[in-house]
Length: 144
Image (cartoon, rainbow, N blue to C red; front, side, top):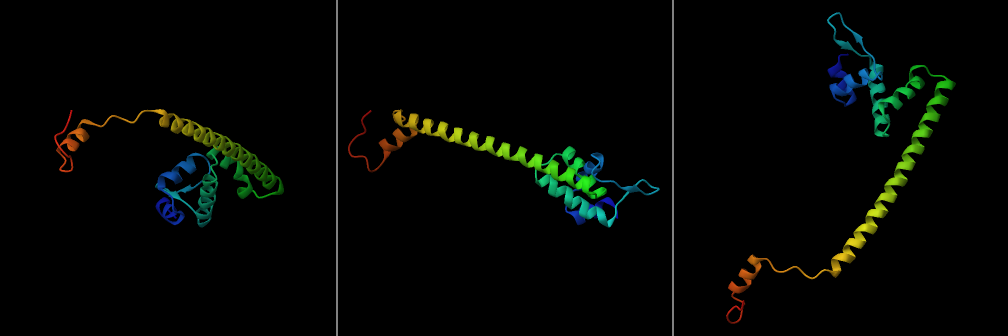
């Protein structure tokens, strides 16, 4: 199948497929005219790659995991599982950092709210003063 058909069937852009090929994640054969040709297997491969990207893995890390699909073996499976475990630890650490950042932001916002409460109320804007003076509910002449 040609690149456009693979893109449509896999639900990705042609640009993504070219990027995957550039990164060594996907390969194609070429027709005599230079057009890329893909197999039915490549649809599943692209889905697999997309799943790994969705897990926030880099193209370099994904390339390290591909031997488990390209050359299945106990060694390659073990290596892929170990790499995924390290990535999970990295993501867990990032989550911890984000939680700490959120808690710090919450504390700073609380300080900001507390400080805001100590400030005098803002002076009315000139338009508000003019509207109050011209309001039919104003009793008597407006005083400046």
